[in-house]
Image (cartoon, rainbow, N blue to C red; front, top):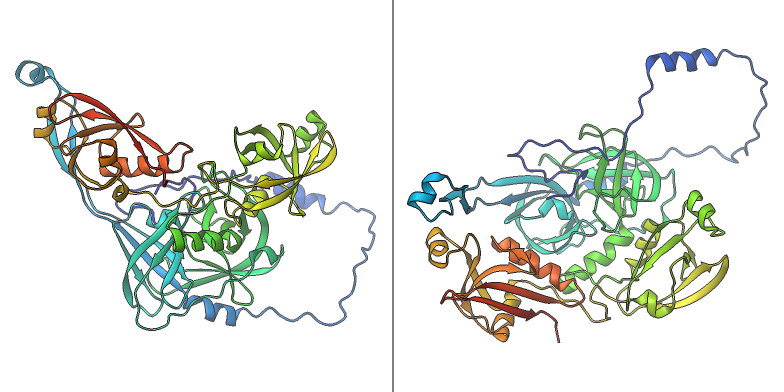
Length: 494
């Protein structure tokens, strides 16, 4: 499930692991505390601060109604990776060279089932549930337990690693208690929120806190989209995919990350805002994959040091360090050294905030960027593109698109074809393999120069190629007659 520093509600039970810390905690030693305490006895001039007096007593915040509404819409999710048989080849020894083929011996190994747990949020009365990608990543089976302890088999509708969101569907005969979705953009620092999860399959649990910050980026998604809501409401392991709820009982975020040196709650949790979730869920439901709008730049948040070094004239915004060839930014006239300070009139303070703005858009949408170029403001109209460099709808590519079925090579096949690994093509029907001329019996060894040792390998290669600009699989392997062969498979939708 692979995203480090995440709150691993779906962490594998069979494997003992420690969650790495995202932040480094500064510990104040006892001697320093004593010094601070002693310093308070020093007499200093006192000046009374002037505060505006409230016109009426402030009402106590009552979160009971919000809690009651949300606990029934949060579910427990169990994800299971079934045991699999894998063929491994141990390193050859001297006996293999004299009495074997010199390639080492094959061994069939049965992996253990792996089980993980997390939470999810019911979005609609007909059974659509949002959770984290890392909760269900790699799952062969998904089991969903409601707050009233009824259990259902879940079907994965779609998943997006870049935002760590996934959509699951359960089939029900009656209406489920869906949680209304609020506007995370309207959240204010200091506002009360609830973190709701169902980590132990016991019924949902609730913790309370405030919004500590917005548009936080942690670098935990390895280049993915991050614009977290930071809260001090306790978020612990197993709460991944649970709900961050405002005082009105509306969903404003999906709990995803904690910062901790131990793997347990230590003060800060992070949630994906609904401003990102809404678009991702809608795309997954309609297309099976996210229609991501790409600006086509590399850059980062403007810092005081960068502003001084480059004489930018601002300490806010996103500095453009590279412009991608043939991308939306290049076509609009954006140049290296520009600073993006607004999108459609909304001010941009940092990269995370700008990423969040673009998640609301589709490829083909036109946005107006305000930039600073040599300290002078300039407005540019940009037509956003998709990951393939055009404005078409990106469809979800999978093994079905290839029109072929595969199996991992066994020891007999490896000896027959004199190879150490590969996938054997069992059948070829209408699809991309037939179009490319690949026939039954072909051994796929590499796709885009990556060794193919399992079905997961080729599925991953298809997804990566589908998200590239050329959408091509370069395949090398061995034919049924033992000859080396090379093919180019076009995945484009045209």
